[in-house]
Amino acid sequence: MKIPQIPTHAPYSDRQRAWLSGFFAGMHTHIIQSAGSANSADVRLVHILYGSQTGNAESVANDAANLAKNHGLKPIVKSMAEIDVDAFAGMDYLLLITSTYGEGEMPDNAQLLWEAACSTGLPNLEHLHYSVLALGDTGYDLFCQAGKDWDEKLAAHGAIRLYERVDCDVDFEEPAQNWLAAVIPQMAEGASGTVIDLTAPQSDKPLYHRKNPFPAKLLVNRILTADASSKETRHYEISIAGSGLSYEAGDALCIVPTNDPQLVTDILTAIGCKGDEMEPVNGELMSLQVALQNLFEIKLPSKEFVQEIAKRSGDQELNGILASGDKEPLSDYLWGRDILDLLLQFPNSEFAAAEFLALLKPLQHRAYSISSSGKLHPETVHLTVASVRYDSHNRHHKGVCSTFLADLVEADTDVRCFFTPNKAFRVPDDDSLPIIMVGPGTGVAPFRAFLQERQFRNAPGKNWLFFGERNSATDFFYQDELLAMQASGLLTHLDLAFSRDQEEKIYVQDRMLDSAAELFAWLEAGGHFYVCGDAYRMAKDVDKALHEVIATQGQLSEQQAADYVNQLKKDKRYVRDVY
Ligand SMILES: Cc1cc2nc3c(=O)[nH]c(=O)nc-3n(C[C@H](O)[C@H](O)[C@H](O)COP(=O)(O)OP(=O)(O)OC[C@H]3O[C@@H](n4cnc5c(N)ncnc54)[C@H](O)[C@@H]3O)c2cc1C
Ligand SMILES: NC(=O)c1ccc[n+]([C@@H]2O[C@H](COP(=O)([O-])OP(=O)(O)OC[C@H]3O[C@@H](n4cnc5c(N)ncnc54)[C@H](OP(=O)(O)O)[C@@H]3O)[C@@H](O)[C@H]2O)c1
Ligand SMILES: Cc1cc2nc3c(=O)[nH]c(=O)nc-3n(C[C@H](O)[C@H](O)[C@H](O)COP(=O)(O)O)c2cc1C
Image (cartoon, rainbow, N blue to C red):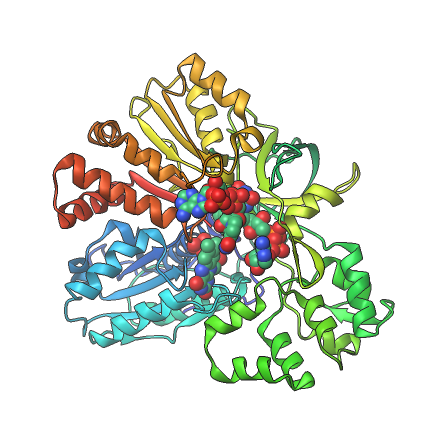
């Protein structure tokens, strides 16, 4: 069977599903070889499993399915939450695509399957041909750990690695495309099926995505916290009028920022460059100043940059930490230190322009959970963003994107943005079901959107919001709106936890425990439980409190409560948007 080559220049999907489905579905294809006699029983099945928190791995899985079809294969795409370990016994060909979350952990929808694979184990997999695509971010210590873990686990159970695992950094599209282009023809080898010509031209490419963001205008920049607050959180409204774009409550908007011009100037001074040095970047000749302003991460130091600084300075402490290979002392050392801090701290910090650029990572977009309903606000997207500002190492530091929005956007500035759908994080289809939303801090964002959505739909189901911040007088975001929703009956319960209004800390999980009986009753009535906000402390503690509520109110053992929670996850009634 002749298998056509996929053109390596073929454009690839970003996170937006539309592009991907459009890629193959919309293009002009023609059959170049038909296995006329092959009936559906002869067609080779390829299982495509994905573990995905915010949709990247899911989008690659959908691409994989389209491509597999075009190679005469029959793809079966499933989230890892949809299968159990026994299902592996029935697979002969498997593409496993997963991101990594938390600190080297599985994304939420892969977590239960992974736990089962570790505890009860997988069946014998000597019949299984597989390959893993791992999505991650080299900025994290445990890069692509979830993909690495699955790759090892499958091999340990005898599965045949048909193609080496590929680990993708933040710019995952091209390596993912290359992986698909290599692995799918291998999976199709020897199979009977209909092969489609992939060299036909493609059409229907969606206009806006990561590589081509929509140049939106910022309509509203309003501070939510009072002057006396210890924090600064802002409400933004961004116009998408005329873009043809739409979104759902639960989706995120990604913003592509530019860097603070003052930071660029300070870095140029520190490295001994003028800024007018011309350098090729992404095939284009541009000045160092322009490149630093627009295209490179100049705040968070890359590992290569830290290593170079350690080498040049010969600093004992830093070299000792690097030599130990221990991640924790290094992140402790780097906490609160940015690139400029390191340049200023050590001598020999002069760099030639090209040498400096080679040590930087590309400037990445930042994701924000949308705080409006696209039905109520089809032409604007609302965001709720905490401005990152802190003092350390004798300097004032500013988060790149949050302060780009807060300080740098003028009337004529384009706010370059694109959507990332989060299909797992949605209000229930059944409007009569109760929903429980736990969203302290900026975690309230998607729940404002959910409440607008439920209002728009006239959903009769009850709504319960747990919100928390530091002080009620200064940090009660959207106070008027939320109280009005409570008064109108839309918000059945609004439970507040202001952590610093009293001596001892009170958090949202304390409020959950205060209302344990009713919370359990809502779950028993088919309620959906949502969490948004800080992943590292809050979401873990809320999870613990949820187990406690279920154990005490359901009179269940620890194990039975864990089973109950796992069932909620399987039923997609316990979902999180945590960061
Ligand atoms: C799916 C998703 C949804 C999100 N939704 C929201 C949202 O709705 N609202 C929101 O505000 N954010 C949200 N975020 C977080 C957001 O994407 C950015 O990470 C955040 O705005 C910080 O970006 P920045 O560019 O301003 O800061 P960066 O330039 O990325 O700097 C942040 C870094 O600064 C350092 N730092 C921060 N504070 C301190 C400190 N006190 N001391 C020392 N060092 C410090 C840390 O290294 C930290 O990683 C979301 C993230 C994800 C993944
Ligand atoms: N890594 C860090 O040290 C750190 C610190 C702050 C924020 N962040 C990140 O910054 C982003 C924005 O934060 P944010 O402005 O939305 O607010 P946030 O920092 O999450 O704070 C919102 C509220 O949650 C409380 N809180 C703190 N620890 C908690 C816990 N374990 N359980 C429940 N509630 C807890 C805070 O109380 P108190 O502040 O009074 O404890 C505050 O009242 C998030 O991504 C967050 O992860 C990180
Ligand atoms: C809160 C958070 C934690 C993350 N932790 C890791 C990590 O430990 N290791 C890693 O390689 N990538 C990590 N990532 C990066 C994601 O794996 C990466 O962005 C991936 O493309 C997301 O794909 P998804 O949308 O399919 O979930 C993390 C991202 C976030 C937002």
